[in-house]
Structures are given as C-alpha cells and as structure tokens.
Length: 160
Image: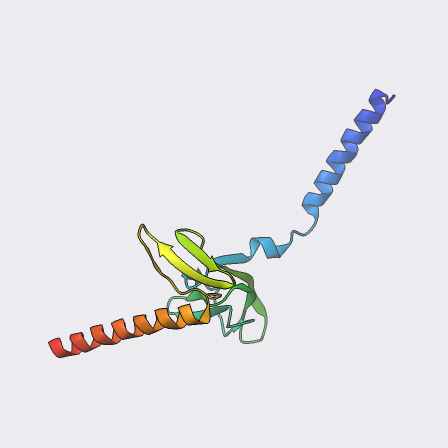
C-alpha cells in the first residue's frame, strides 16, 4: 500500500521531468522537414545573403533559384535527402530535410503479378506514369505522350 507522500513525490518527480524535457534542445529534424509529393513542386523562402545551395541527392529533389529570395523545390524520386544553404564564408544559414513521397489522392495502382500500372482517377481513370511502374507500361505511356505532344506542336507551328 502506498501512502499519500509517495503519490505526492511521484507527481512532483513527474513535473520536474516534464519541465526538464522542455528545456532540452528539441530535434531540428521534425521542425525542419519539408514534405513534398513526387512530381510536385513547392516554393520556399531563403534566408538573406545566400551564396551556395547544396542538395544531398538531386535524384530525389531538385531546386531552382528564383528572384526575390525564393527557391522552387521539386520532388524527383522517392526518398529522403537534405538541403543546405550557405553564406559566402561557408556558414550554414539553413538546413532542411526533404521527404519525397508518392501521390495517394486519386491514384490507383493495378498489379498483374509483379507488373504495376498506375492510373489517375479524377474522376475518370487515365494512365499515369509513376516511378515503379512496369517498364513496358511506362514506355508505352511515354510514347503516346510524346506523339501527342509532337502533334500538338506541329499543329501550333502550322497555325502561325
């Protein structure tokens, strides 16, 4: 049987531990994480006096610097990478973790054994190429897209 003193000292100990944990440095990973969908872009404001921008793995994310201290971050492949922004002296002005994930909204993946095809259903389902799709499906969809684009470009140049 525990006494009131034991409950009181446990409560005080819990409060002390809670207060102490609030004083510990927080992980910057969670606060400094940028989530983005594959094949999507987002805009991020850069700090002042940026000289160098480093992307850990440009196969996962890429950046394009814009005027006004902005950078466009584009998801290129699944995974996690990082972005480091430096000033002229090499001091780190900003560091962000970038997590690129696949689109889940309005997409359907169809598996035929080990082969995968992805469709965008908004509301009708149309072919959508996504990293991880079967090579033949990917190539066929890209081929159709290339033909359509070249036909529209040709029609546009004839109209001029």
